[in-house]
Length: 121
Image (tube, rainbow, N blue to C red; front, side, top):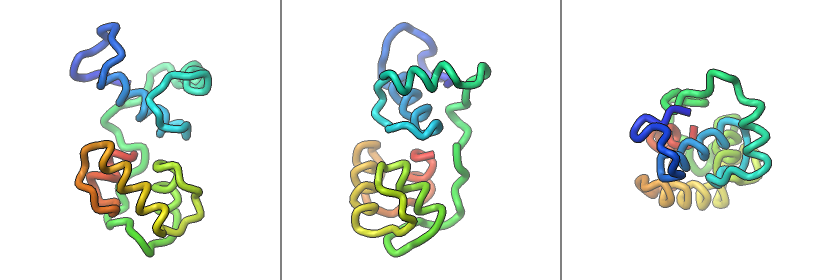
């Protein structure tokens, strides 16, 4: 992961935590920002060239993903916000999306538009 603002400075700060969270999302781990045993094992298996912080893991589908939607995009959102991925965007998914948006300082509306999508992926 590219630490574009401060680089490698020996401090586990905001930028490092964001890089760890993005790595965890990319590798399907729980996004908690903690480099525990599972994250450490995934880091050891990661490609030597690393991952780009700016490259989306999954491109934005070009439409909002919201309550009532169904399908693969909903499943991807559900995995990213730690909701059982059943492909149906219901109240539990909306609540988890709102919590994620609040945590990340995004506009809290429960709808996955381009800003929320690009932060998730």
